[in-house]
Image (tube, rainbow, N blue to C red):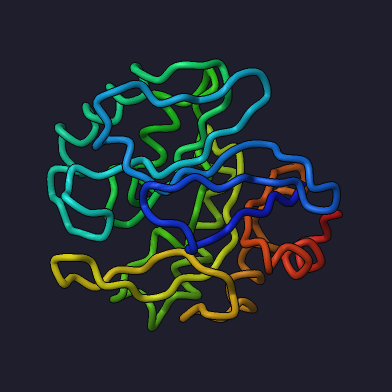
Length: 220
């Protein structure tokens, strides 16, 4: 199944519908906010609903480097956010280079220790890139996509591009976008995804790239 969503066009506080490509059925919601900035409970939805969100950051803004994310405080904050969540829907946590789940190792640990019971990962290799990785982005994407079947708890793969964004503190970061505005070519991203994403695994992509991704990955 290919799931499409507005990619990179929502603010950090907004929600976007996730739709099954072809039939247009709403299968869940994508939240671009920060789970670790919430003190109330996050609504996972009920039944077969899907919630996809970032794993979150202890920094003041999504694109800011915050070392605590990769130490005990970040891990504990994520565990608390999950414990406070309400609803019986499935929650896919999406990694990001500057968030708690930032690389293959942190995703592997999370998969082993926390996935299950409606909690899983939506592996997003493009979001796990940093600006310094852009020159060799193809190699990095290949290695991360290769982990789709090896990292426990991966429920879906995100296939999208990245563009530069300036955080409020002036730091340059990468944010998800459609292939048309991506700093890494769609061909490079799709080639890695086609090699490693299992045929039965749901794929999430930008609304405008749904047909391209479906064709490249042999999906309906």
